[in-house]
Length: 396
Image (cartoon, rainbow, N blue to C red; front, side, top):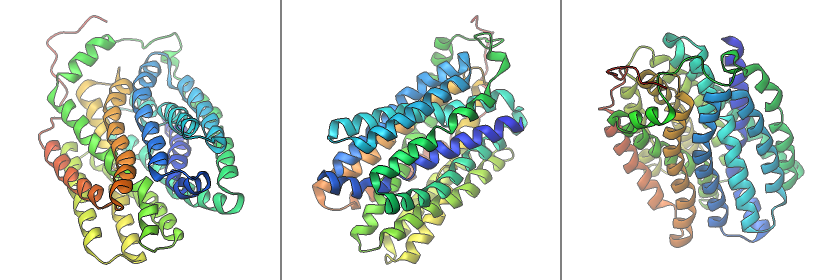
């Protein structure tokens, strides 16, 4: 179990750590290429929606043949995507590399696939805790990698910095071999009561699954808008780029604690109540941030609070899915929930750039983030996390 946790956490650390720093490239790339912010934001939005779509199929393949093959493929896509992003000279090639290739890469190297391995190898009474450990690793990756990426941009330039990150992404390949699952070696799971279509039909008819998907949409909208656009928002307000870099690092640092605490509390407190609290607290944090005078101190306080709430939705959401439906199709079902997250991510990334270019301000998107946080807090309250009642086993 510890081998699975350690290697899964290391893979998520690299994959999530690299992606969380993409906001640092917004101004260097748009200024160098003479592009609008919407051009960059659209590519990142495509990345997020591609991640969501590909995540569904990556989950299906991982459930059927094992996660390590999917992770290896994802690591290779990551490297090629970063190399291509460094040398893209048109908005189209930038969207194909930063958007499509890296989106596919993230689908194969992040939570849905890694959580499937954890769900099948960790006892149910420790599953939420184990998922919290892995999510915390992704947060540590942000804390570790964002300053590294900022340093690389300043030291080697934005293009060469992307090339170096491509080499770092290749480190996920040897880690993947430690996640081979013997039970999947023969080409399938030892026992399944449902086919893929039966599992999907059951999940999408279940109201709690629909509510989890809707809440995760909000999660994606908020975190991607902040991650991609806050560095430029702060610079527009006259703060130095270092403030944004430190803020993103603080989000990553405090998210280490937030995700671990959320995963641990999920063993003792109803997970839908944890999710509701997180979304309500996000809305309150954003509202206070906009009301108080902007300064480096207020940014750091906001980043620390948001860090506690950043990816803390991930362990309770995925553990709830596992608790309701079981683990045989966990990667696939988590992939569908995450697809909803990525639709929100698309809207947060692209919508932030679009509305900024139209209005010259991010105010509308901040207000939307507050309203959506309240909405997500309310709809998670009626979620039922008990195992679904099945009248009889379904033939696979």
